[in-house]
Length: 456
Length: 159
Image (cartoon, rainbow over all chains, first blue to last red; front, top):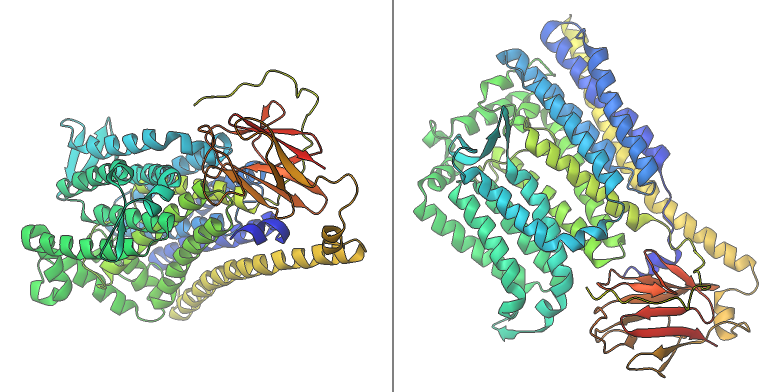
């Protein structure tokens, strides 16, 4: 399938195009900050030079790192991320201003950490295939991370979900990092066992069931993570992991039967959850009839009023009242944008997410090794599902479940993890788009030196 | 600040946002066409040379390798023609060169050519592919007689 791409299809580096887009993305990000100042105080904020300078510095550092370590990487990913991050910072600042909180500066700090991690991943990980060696390690690490919040003393419960850990003054959501590790673990496992999963086994109804020993380890890994999440009351993340597992299994084995089985399992599980868990029932009722359950669905109703007030072109940054919605700076940041930038702005934001997913899938198509393909698909699916679940939730397309909007929401763990995801995607895409072999003459003079078979 | 200015700023900002989105899309678009242009250029390049790829296939140059021979290991002596390149080497059933060797991955490596050179590329195998005594990390050119070791098997390009 990639044979034709391999032979006559040359990708250009496109670093100049990336720089151009980065400049535009900074105009979007810093411009939003200026607009917020104008909308709330009637003047451009005085610290715009400091803020803009810091943002520019971070983005330039990313760009230089890409030029040095991944010259063929995708030119669109970083600018899109930079624009989204800038928009998020501006909106958080805007809500801070109304509520006298200070989430924006900690968000900027987390973004700096995210960028450091991004640069670190690109510098240290020169070939994504190395990660394949850590299949089980990362699977185990993911499960340990997911279990951490349940440990007394370290874990902390916020708003009914026990998904936080607190060490010293820092709180962190380990689940955000776990999703990255799980993608690596799934990809590494499936790439080795996909033939066995697809071919060996019995045929039941219209699905080929694989042998237990092939599916076993991954099923155990996945059930543990799902169980932990359900136990912690984190519905959004369990949905995310379920979908991720299903899509990766489907992509690896090319059996559409998995989707049928998965959807049936999902419908069964969701219905059982609706009957058994009060928490779920509240969410579903709030989704079907928010005005009939006004106290439970207060947040949802506020968000919808906000978006309606924003209309087609919005109130203008700093001129609406998005701060009336609870959590308008994190889970409900999209309705805040809907109020201040209108449908026009929200469509642009959703399109930016679509571009990220498109670039990830494109990378998977172009990539030459199966592990890279699965990794890119997995990371793209994490993004797509997360955006779908959270935006679908706040716009009442599906029942509301708490998940962060990548790069926009206030929340350090999610921001840092997403920067790492983008770094990994860029690493894979650099590998995938690099033109076919720069012919390196093999040294044949030492052909009669001792040859060592590495046995493992 | 007057209402009009605020209105203008609001629309200007939305315009900037969409200009960004549209330029990102246009970079993606030019990425597709850029790649195609590169291929056309490559085709033009081969057309300029009278001995294009097709011509060469019909009449291989003297001194070009024509087959892969297994020189060591359980299947030593087997010969596979290079005519159906690229050749997949591995333990799987779809491999052109199928090796019954525990140290070989299902899809282990690939031998392919780009017009005038042959190279071998490791496909993410467990035990690696060696050219000479070095484990390769990227596609590596092969010349007549260079030995490729995969598991316990050694392959060689021959005339």
